[in-house]
Length: 352
Ligand code: NAI
Ligand code: MG
Image 1: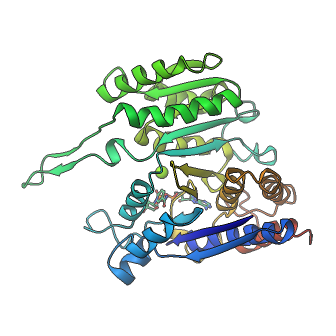
Image 2: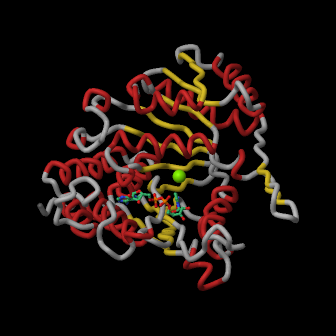
Image 3: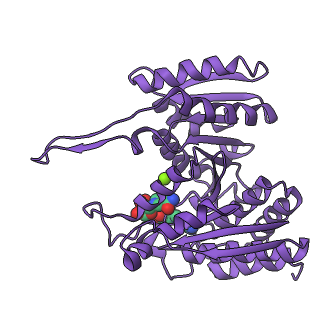
């Protein structure tokens, strides 16, 4: 298979972890005889430095015309929340322009990491769920206002029936292939948008009679996701709640450095680690590359390359087995980002 992949490493630890993801993908290309063509492009702080824009048109055009985007992270603190132009604007606009309405975040702890989580082993063992987070609407994209005196601010949260419908179908389809349980997380007791979510999702559930549907208020979900995470199969939620809950859920897996995601639209697909740019770790060879490497596995799966995806996951499992992990997973580890990435690509190339 030939695939053209736009690589947007971003800033902070982005370039370091994405380098390892590219190595894993290249190794898969060699072993399974695929032609993966990488095209690097600017986004985030580096793009602002060089072009004045967090998402240069050239980058956007490239992403619109590739098979997939591999994204690192953005968020250099030199552009703080007082800056008019911020790196995060680049990612938000990219998601919108590519129509990436569904962010899919699987959560299944690795066997070798069950004791890394601060949660009790009996809570963590056997957890296997996936969060479907709406990604191109809601409060992150609503009109923002600040009065002249700077004393009153507002962010509009808006959802249309269509925006809910398209992600709900994806979530139900996923549930149908899994344990047939879907939980909608919302705040229907106080938010009008949540009441619309409930109405629309309930209506769609008629198309999926085998899937059982539950509703859970977001504050309760925040508790349940770490006190009884085994109950979940597919969690469907809006942009803001999905952002919060997936960071919280990372506690189950031991580190946010192992969580991968796929963002899908009708025409485009982007794969990225759940974590941000972790600026403090930039250039120190300590960032965990697993999340980026596992995002590559999700990319391969997306293109129907199931065996190849499995190989990448096995590489991560082997690294854990041999304790070739970064310090977030083992504080005494002598291995860094590079060594972990090298171990996995060598495993794929069968050089270990
Ligand atoms: P962050 O995810 O960058 O870091 C939070 C903490 O998670 C770190 O202190 C570290 O303990 C851990 N961590 C994150 N990635 C790790 C990795 N690969 N290996 C080991 N540990 C890791 O979130 P933070 O500090 O809230 O945000 C930093 C910047 O990143 C901000 O500007 C934020 O807006 C941006 N951000 C960007 C995202 C993206 O590009 N998709 C997503 C989330 C945040
Ligand atoms: Mg986040």
